[in-house]
Image (tube, rainbow over all chains, first blue to last red; front, top):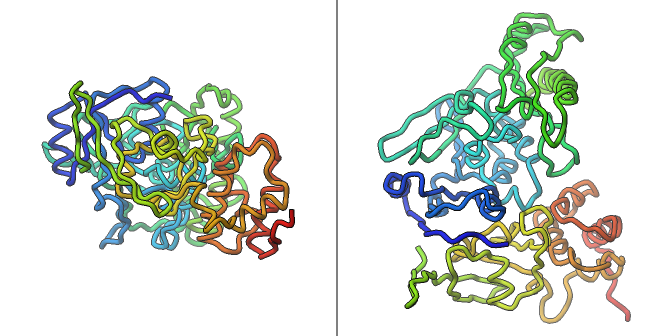
Length: 281
Length: 171
């Protein structure tokens, strides 16, 4: 399979990458792990004049603890997240989500940044990151900005990324949540895209649910936070009646809306139970 | 960044260095050259197979700095300066690796097309986890599709290797 020709750039610093992107505008595409960009170029969905590789930006490949937050570099691969002892200790739900993502070969290439900026509703990392209240840092030649990851998506493959911007890091704030989890239903157990998935985080004390975030993936054209369901659960005693809230499921090749509506109800209920019972798992 | 060389027709190529199976090769590649093709066509290492070419089937699996990746989704320029192991680098001094011998012993090879990638995924697993469970073996090879064997003999072959139950070929 043929990859259309392009001009290749491999900047040594984030600033240099930003300068190249500022000059080239929408004639350039950023290359990180390549599992999506090269796939799209092979099937004819993408033919950029310029490809700007981030491979030299090693500072974007680390996971570190800072006062008040955990920072994940955007070039961190799925397997780096899966095997990170820091993340396993703090938020095990995130390594587990990274592990369900795809085959080992893809998890060694694909990056968390790519998983986010693609904006596809079946991506595995955005839901659990939103449940953990993550924010992202976007850098361009004009400066930088941060925003809650939740605000980044607004439609299928539609994000608030501006031309010339690079996603550099994801930040998870220290929090009072007591548990979180990501549950996914795919057509195979391994490496399949989600037909539907639910990520939740909870703050439990005693037998009361004091805080909850519920995020559904593949259920709508974009990752969907179900605020209505959250409001109806907060402050309630935890019992078998914690119910999944109806969402706005979409039809797609992997499942009809009706099928998804059933799935998200079951997944949300199971995810809540797991996060409440098992913590960040 | 790799040195760029433009020929008289205006085609730009990059001089890259690949450490493949311990041998350092300097090759001239276009920016859009895919690693699988460079290994096969420029280095004659045709053990790496081309299947779906979209990162689904795993027949093009190689180890990049020791980790299995689909070489069909890697630009050769991106692999500049990195260490690559292909199936040709698994046997040492003409002796098959225990995994290869075990796959023969267990009749885990039928058409053989998935085998190079399967062996490399298994090799990477046993390097990082010498005593995997059956579930871990199945997970590790889940990115390598085999349409012949039904996987049972492959999984048995990998487990036998991990448990030191590989007898030399007596043919």
